[in-house]
Image (cartoon, rainbow, N blue to C red):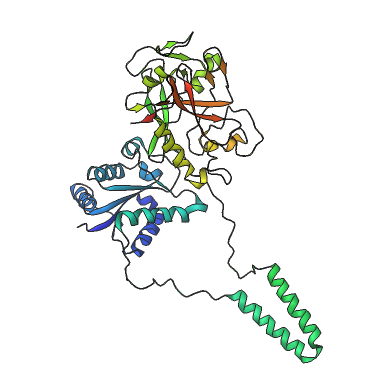
Length: 421
């Protein structure tokens, strides 16, 4: 049986905010281990940490600039995972994980506490996650925790005080007419101004989008090109289009002067070499299937669906009231033709890319010409369509708000994004 419900991994520079979480955990009746006073360094420190992690059910890691730079928090996370403990990262500022932590937490979803206006939702999400892993433990079953005295409703008190004052004055000689006028005016005032100075002011709720969890220079291809990656849900995707000239076995991918179903080819976006640095190459499908670096692969149709379903399920990524409108959250900020229709990728593109995925409109090579540069981003999947020599794809357009499922002949040149194995 575990001695502790929760082990807290953090930097003491963040003690103030982390203590507020600790208090919340303990109010649920959960036992918490946290190094509050400091432990002597050396072997004694290691033994205490090892014992505490082994005797805890869940590790909550508070990720910040200081904790991400700490050798000890990285070791705590690594050891916890080696013990098959659940680790829940909570981001309390917008700094990225260091590479060692990022490696350990690949595929682990995190709680984003960086959005000031949305911290209550983040806290609720964290508490629900812990309840699933630990269970609810009421410190005093059958009772309601004392939250202090209920605040007096001063606005109602003032209303009735004024009411009886008016009644008293009116009763003294001005008669029923003035009484009626005064009462009606008071009621109208209350209806038109329901929030008096003593009332609690609750601002309209605004949704802040979370900061993307970018992993800079996370992977290198066979040509020596480095790529940023981004964690979205439990998946880790490349945040840039592939631009390798060799496949993952070191074989040269020929530049395509023609098209082929069977010979691997690469193409310049819009037929222009200078576009490669930003937009990557376009590849036919046989090349796309082998261009992802080792440890990564061309995503299946199912993995694309996992991505879009996750984004669709997070309210802050959806544009408007239609949960299909997620293309802006996945599209890059630059390169798109403009469009006036709300929620389309080309409308106010500076608000795009909340996820960090950054889909770029590299267009297509359709066998005889280049098309849709600046207007569409079309990505291969690894899943073949039932019709021979066709393959499922994902399509972003400057004039559409959703991410569309489509299929293309496998000799086309399309963009490639890889997902981590």
